[in-house]
Image (tube, rainbow, N blue to C red; front, side, top):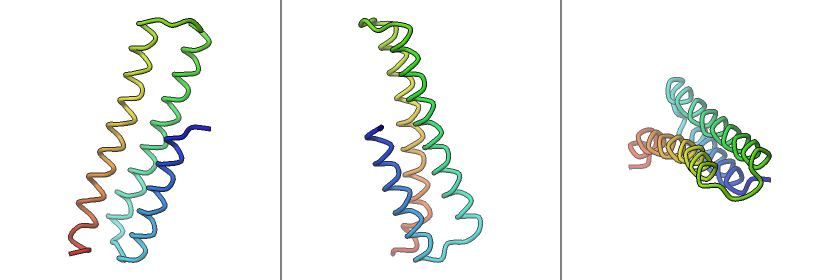
Length: 95
């Protein structure tokens, strides 16, 4: 149901295909798999927090908005971390 989760899934598939294509090491696979897991776990936590907030406060609330923003920021931080990890692993192999 989550649009961003589909984006994360596509990025994960690209990372796996690149890992297979460039024959990354076991340690690099660990980093890639860990990053994929952290991003998906963050997305699940974010979705859970948003749904709980919607149950607790169906009407608009600045406090609830702040909580949702923090939850979404956690996903963004994990996605940026995964992206940077991917760059560190794949840029040297591409060039």
